[in-house]
Structure formats: structure tokens, C-alpha cells
Length: 401
Image (cartoon, rainbow, N blue to C red; front, side, top):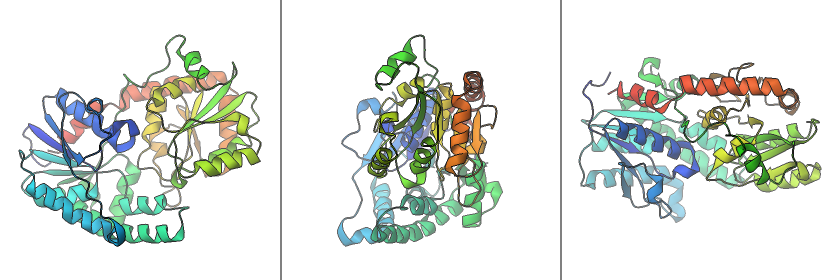
């Protein structure tokens, strides 16, 4: 425990705040909203972005933005160290009310704020082990880019290790990431607290009467189509190639695969789909500001990732009444928390290894059994209602103050 007094202001720190992108930005939106609901002033300290609109911030939340600090040219090689130095300067010069506590979602902001406000309690909420994420993110990139990101990862290792060691408390969203963080940085497990996130049941919920067909019409699919949905960035760490290979093995009639998201893998996926003769059965929607519409049109959800800090899209799908399929984490090649979210046989199905034939079998099983899909979808919705709420998440974080 850090201290028991009820805070009046908490600063939330992260490089961006564009909730429509999802991920950590969306997390900050809901945490800030939950803090304001408890009469706690929430201040988002973030990098300025010209595409940020007033609608992106919950009512009552203060956004304190700073200029872009990213270096250009040859200095990009030492970007993490330069960003840290510049961010420390920005925080030291900021003329604003000192917060009662600081919750950081990025190791740069965690370490910089520890220097700027050494007498305030700090909670570092780690999405992942950041150097590991960077290396996974670099997979499939040209050699020179991988080399640069590997050098960045080494710098971030030192930065994140110091942030983890100095923070008053460290939070992960899953047990899998807690174990990984403790092993990589050699810190005691009792300093790391697992606090699962919440999901907005106001935004993500099963379709109302007539909604399902309404959203399906926008996908230009025939009546009676069975939709397999994947909402993810189309990048190597999300493993969309595995899902495409698996779907090529699916023989269920009227089955369609829908990708909601964009990224560097999309050109390959489109080319490969044509080669496999799957183009008519695939839809690429790109980035969507309303993914909830696509969940309501789908029959089941698949996330083939081999690296996920948590996998919040599972909660979005489950809250929408969809059964989920994902790859079981093994702590080595597959670093996911899927088995902490998806209850195998109750709210979805787990694939023991990232193999196309195994994934195809699970997809076929759910596509071929309407009753099983509906039962799992109902169980998934109930799980979200009982286990994954933003109020519960924020209250657990406040207990660390």
C-alpha cells in the first residue's frame, strides 16, 4: 500500500490520446471517466495531436498536452534516451498543479514523472514488457529497421527496468505479463499487482432486434452468411497470416472472414487471398471508429495473435455476445493471456498451438453448431458483466494509493 488518503487529482500519462484507435488510448478514456465519476480530477498528460477532438475526452477530464518530442534524422537511433531527456525537461517546466498521484502507461512517462514528482506516489501500469513488444513489432520489417528497433529495445530495457524498480507499485492487466515482467527485470512478484481491465457495456452489447441484419448489409454479404470476425492491427505480431491459412481450410458453407483493422500485412493478405481463391469470402474493412457495429454483425470472433499484453478486443467481442477463439499462451513463443480471458469450452475455444489446421478445426466446430455458439456467447456476456468492469478496475488501482 502507498497511502490511504483519497486523492483529489490523478495524472494519467501516455504518449497519445486518441480513443478511437483503441488499445491504451481507449483504456485511458474509460479510466479517466471512472475517476471523474468518483469526483477525482483526472488530468491526461499527453503529446499534442492535431486530430484530437473534444469528443475524444470524457466530460470533466483535463487534457494537458505537450509538443511532439520525437527526434529526426540520425538522432532517431538514440530516440528513447532523447525522448526521456526531453520529457523530463517538459515535466520539470510544466506550470501546473502537482497531482496527488500519477498513473503512467508508458515507461518513458513513468521514469520522467518519477524524477519530476519524487514525493508523489507512482503506479506504472505496464501493457507489456516494452522491449519484447518492440522486437515482436519489428518482425517482418526490413533488416535495417529491425536493427534500429533492436537498438531501441536495449535502451528501453534500461528505462523500463528503472521505472519498474522505482515505482511505488507496478500493475499488469494479466498474470502472464506479471510473470514475464518479474522474470525480465528480476523484481519481486509481490510488487506487481494484476488488475484486469473493464469493458464498456454501454458501447459493446449484443445486437437489438433488427440490428444484426442492418449491420450485415453494409458488408455486402448474402443472407444466411456465417461471419468470422477478426479485429486487430494487420501486423506480424497479430498473426493474421495464420488466420487466413486456417480459413482456407474451412469448408463450412456460407462462411466469410472479415478483417477489421489495417497495417503492413494487408497487401500480402489481399494477394494471398487471391492466390488461394478466397477473395469472394473475405472482407477488409480497414480501421473503424465503430467496431461495435461489426461485432454485432458477426457470428464468432478470432484473434490469432502470438503476442498480446492483454487482448482487450476479446472483451469487446464477449460483451457483444460472441464466442471467442484464440491461441493459448505458452510463455515462450506465444506470449498471450488468452486463457485468462477465454474460458475454454464455456465462453469460447482455445487453440493449443499456432497451427492452421488446429485453428480451422475450432472455427469449423463453432460455425457448425448454432446452439453451442449462442450458449458460449451468452456465457461470454455474463463473464464481462461479472468480472470486467471499469469501476472495479479503478477501485483496485485506488487501493494502491
